[in-house]
Structure formats: structure tokens, C-alpha cells
Length: 330
Ligand SMILES: Cc1cc2nc3c(=O)[nH]c(=O)nc-3n(C[C@H](O)[C@H](O)[C@H](O)COP(=O)(O)O)c2cc1C
Image 1 (cartoon, helix red, strand yellow):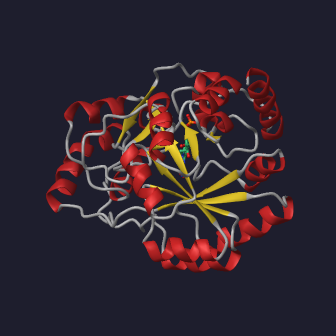
Image 2 (cartoon, rainbow, N blue to C red):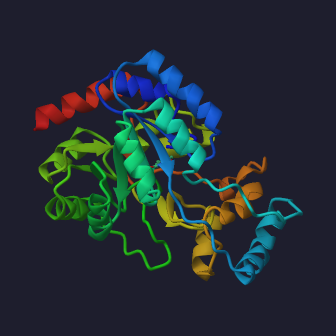
């Protein structure tokens, strides 16, 4: 979970028998190198480094201009005058520089979201000894990952917090839920499948195994661990979470992400206005998201549909609890 996972969270999970995953989007390469060295000091168990692999945005200038107009009243509401002129935010994708770093540090596992980088990069990482994981939100995406040589596919259902891993976001996404998606991907591919989305406790883990998954990927549940890097307002929103208080939105980043509903998200959804691609929309929404105004109307608080099941405890204790609950049910 880029921005929310920390070296402490990752190593606590790995040391407890899971696979801690460090999410990287904007993190500079040098910081990733330092983190990997720290992780290796704190655990000798497998860990995962995660990256976005997104297309270069092909923004239409008319879409950027009309989105600016659409955002003006929101900017006025929080007392901001200038919508950024420069929307050429650095790409958050997997670059040559990152590939070179990974070939040097050889993480045991590398995972991707939004699809894969080009085939040559995947082969080089595999040849260097890293196992490759990637999210799929449909059976077709899972099949293409298997063909591309991915070792394990993550079946990410509609319930999941954060960005959806969908490869192409320019079509209507009808959102397959975890319960329906996991067994269909298990039937379609010969590689192992990890279930993700709405899994919050031992019941969810046991259910995922019953559906044919070989493991689970949990995000939201670990946001309430003290090792996570979370703002007080994000933590408080999760403390008060209900089953239906999130929705998918492109209004912050340009890609669909599940976040706590707020007036900005609802208003942008009503107008179904085409938005600039990821991550250009991130640049346009940045001042709104990060304004010091205390209203929560513009905060991008990512979490999934099962957040109300979260428990606040250290990651090692949460891991132990999850394993005991799942084992007793299985
Ligand atoms: C705050 C947050 C940030 C996330 N960031 C990433 C990310 O950087 N990379 C990624 O592959 N998945 C990311 N995800 C999605 C998770 O990998 C996973 O699919 C999801 O959390 C599973 O659903 P759950 O939140 O219901 O457990 C994020 C999820 C959350 C809640």
C-alpha cells in the first residue's frame, strides 16, 4: 500500500510468517535501495516490493481544460485560487531505473498493479531470481498474466480498498466481486491464485481457501496496525467505517480507486465528466486533497468494504490472530 506501508509493517508481517509488501509509487530509487537494505536487516524471510505499471497518459487538452473548469468551484470552496498549470506529474510507473535497481537488489518477490511492464523486464527479473506477482480483476486479465510468465496471480475483487488493478480503465468496469472472481480465475489458470478484496479476518481467509486460493492479500486490515503510516483522520474514518461508506472513484487520480465517500467524490460521479488519465488527475486534485482546510470533503481516504471488521493491534499480533482464526475454521 504505497504511502501506508512502512519497513516496520513489512518486516513484522514477514517475520510472523506472511509476506510483507512494500508499495512504491513516487518513492525515489535511492529510498527504495535504503528500504530494501533495512528490510533485509530486520528479516531473513521473503518480502515483496510492489510497483505500478501504468500507460503513459494520453490526455486530451479539451478534457484537461474542462476538468479545470469543473474543479474551479471546489477550489473556491476551500479558498484555493490556482488550479495547477503544470499537470505533467512525474509518471508513477516502473522505469528502467527501477528495473536496474531491482536487478541489483534481487528482492525475493516483485509485484505489479495495473498490468505488467514490458515482457523483457519481467524476464530479466525472473532470471535474477525474483518471483513475479500481478493483480487481475477479471479472468481475461489473469489469463494474460499467466501467458506473460507471471508466477502467481492476485485475484482482486471489487470490494478491495485502494486502486483497482485493472489494466485498461477506458471501458465500463462492472466490478466482479471476490467471491465470484476467485474460483473463476482458479479454474482458468494453472498458476497459483491469491485472493484479495474484503478479506478482514479468519473467516475471509478460510473462505478464500475454500474458493481455491492458495493465499490471501490483505490491505485494509493492516491499516489499523500501529506500524502503518496513516493520518489520524484516515484512522478515525476506519474506526467509524460501515459496510457501505466507500465507493469507486476516478476523481482523485484518474484511475478507479475505492475510498471513503465524500461530497467531492459524489459530485464528480454525478456528472460523469471524462477525466484526464492517471496520474495527470492526481496533479489536478493535489491541492484539494492536501489542503490544510479541516473539512474532510476532499480527503482521499483509501480503504475497502470490510474496514468495519478492522482490529487495532500490532501487525505480529494481527498475523497470529488471523492464522489461529483461519486454522480453527479450516
Ligand atoms: C490504502 C491502500 C493502498 C493501496 N495501495 C496499493 C499499491 O500501492 N499497490 C497495490 O498493488 N495495491 C494497493 N492496494 C490494493 C491492495 O494491494 C489489495 O488489493 C487490497 O487492499 C485488498 O483489499 P482489502 O483492502 O479489502 O484487503 C492498496 C489498498 C489500500 C487499502
